[in-house]
Image 1 (cartoon, rainbow, N blue to C red):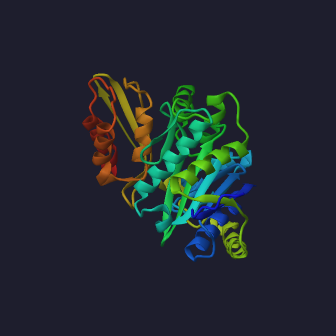
Image 2: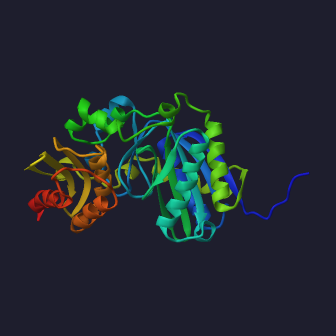
Image 3: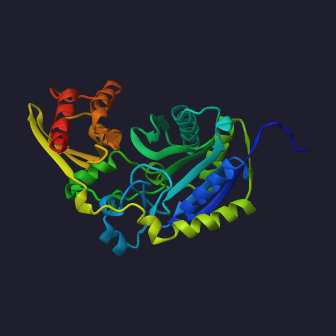
Length: 358
């Protein structure tokens, strides 16, 4: 006899490997359907054909290596959410939650991220890797990122997205993005690999996708006190999807925001300290006075070595007048050895670069 429970029922669906335009259109359709009460709370699994995804407010010419993407068959698409440009392919498994404030028990994204990421980390532990949640929204294994996440509300409806690295090619990711050439040097690539890992690398094999999905589904069901039942797209979602795809699968959507590459100023500064030289390069949004992307280099001693790479992630999309707060807060929360270099020295170096645009 099947046990009867009073747990809420959520839907789980797998939309498979799709073109970027189709996946983004489904993002909009599922979010709108949830907002309008036309679909249940949902866990969606997905994957992308090779794609470079822009944040909603970004310009492809400024963020991506367009020539390389064209020669490599990497599609370019714009997300419906903000944030920075990312590379996606079938070796990354996407997972998304569509729900509302009442269903997730909070309107605070910080609390939601912790609850979801801790559940996802627990799922990965059942697969044999020592995964843990790293605030604000990452999952790591021994200090190396294996899953990044992020969420956004549209009215009362929530879309929370995560990406699990099954296999990962760091060099391909960096070549898709418009990063400085020195980031593609052997030393820089080795440094990038130190902070990212994949399920296959950790286990020496790759579990079946079905087993990974089952682990995540069980963990999220327990975290939210719900049951997941398999399902498909509703008629309303199919209608909303068709409408969204008509707009999104079009060059006008990708080019919705266009700024020439040479209009994105790159600010630089360098300073010699007792422990070595530290350089910074900033992709700067002059209109909003915001750091779009940032890269550190040099020969200073720092332990752990990934600390400056983590700081780059923290400072991305930071307003200029919040740089000092972000840097000091970053080092206050971590045990980082920089010999004689102080966090205040890094703040001063950043201000030297940004003051060029003052």
